[in-house]
Image (tube, rainbow, N blue to C red; front, side, top):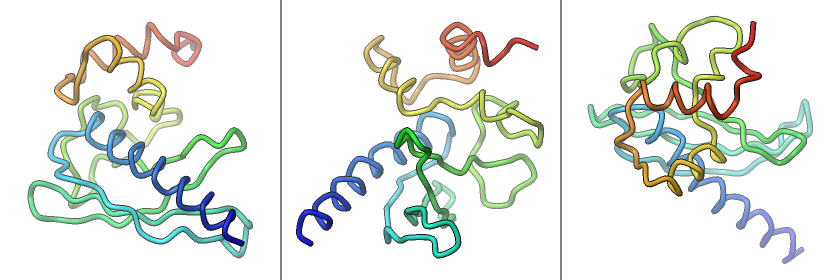
Length: 141
């Protein structure tokens, strides 16, 4: 039982860092993020993690993450037209179109950019160029 609790704690800690980086690298105006409860969705059986995104404006969004079959975290992007959202760095990522998430940096992308010397100050144009270069197959029509 203790091993399960330790695995859950490790998952929360790893995910907390990925959540914070995802929102601070893809958006402007995110003050901080906090993680909440890790729980199992009764309908799907999948683990989910509640988390909060606090904006510089004083607003807060409560969201829920899950993981894909490769144990990569799946986070909720902000969309154009939403109230209480930060500024979206790459406008296409906020559109209600298929595959708009291809314009969002994922945790592995952020690690590569850090190694190249980038920080959360990266702008939308730089993000878009990086993603097209790094994942050209996602942008083929």
